[in-house]
Length: 365
Image 1 (cartoon, rainbow, N blue to C red):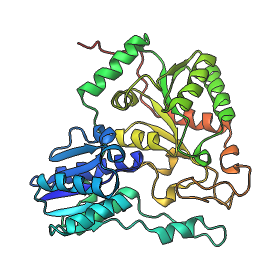
Image 2 (image 1 turned 90 degrees about the vertical axis):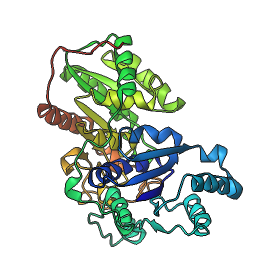
Image 3 (image 1 turned 135 degrees about the horizontal axis):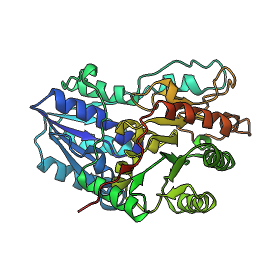
Image 4 (image 1 turned 30 degrees about the horizontal axis):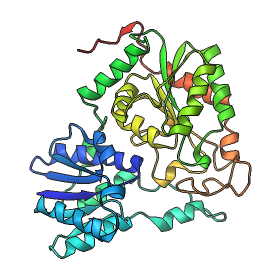
């Protein structure tokens, strides 16, 4: 059985395919999967048996109807396929499904649960209950195509950086003169795609100062994009116990570096999903969004979530993706989370983490 799978964005949602494909590979030895996604996301699927990743740059190389038609023709030549899987539901994937209809390929498509999500985020009469996780929604699409997934086989970690990734991380650590891990290593990714999901910078700066004073820890600062790198560089200059990672490592190297962390602190963001899928101890800060919408850290309990309860702040959640402005105007969902609260949760999580003193970072060849 051969499946054609379509999912182009966003980065976190694409990464969440890793548990599905890993579990499929372990339970179906005769299954072959061709995954079409953005080229930058290929590292999420290293070392998964039976999975071929077709990395493309759709915005540059396959623009418009004709560009997608060319992509369709290229993918068709790689077939035949037994079934198509659309776990995106975007205009781009719908157009590709339309083209494939002429070759007789049937598709199973994701059901996103928009109605239930609208009930969660409306201002009045909210219905806030746990919805299926995005990974579960993916699994249901594969089930409808005849590729049954046994949830009992779904055990992490689900992303496994290869030797090339690990070598990049080791080289970075040696360049930073961090060949020995003699204290706690904490990775912090303070940014998200929207302000309504990003803890205020003043709070993050205060937290870094508290960590400096109260914890024996080295803090690694993760992020991407020129603006984020500029802010993180400034923070690394302010706090001597920090190491700037942003702008210095590729995605592959950052994945492997995450594995060295005793704890990762992130927002509701890609870095949260990455840490969860890598099996790294994790805390995530939530503002306008809520993990009940199905985008929480996969495989983690509510103990990994830092948030103001909707019982205290009835407007939460006001958005599924964090892209709506705060109608209160004060972002209380984020501002009410104090640095002291976050530090306490960090200390509690580190108390349960494996502490490795004087661990050598092996030299690379």
